[in-house]
Amino acid sequence: MDLDKLTGTSDMKKVKDMKGNPLLLFVNAWSIGMTLERNQGLKLAEFSRN
Image (cartoon, rainbow, N blue to C red):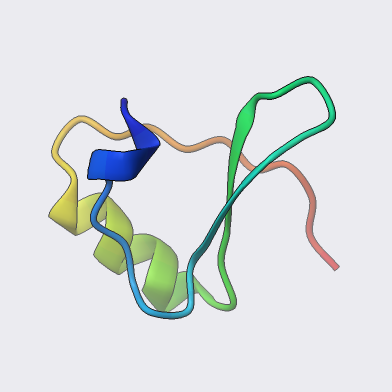
């Protein structure tokens, strides 16, 4: 999926890791759910959690 075309929430951040892979950062579960709802077919994998 093209990150530029991704519809997220205002608190979501689009970044890249040190290898250039896309990462999406979320502040809460609601933001994740809204992003998944707005982008049919988007699959997310958890990277890290505090």
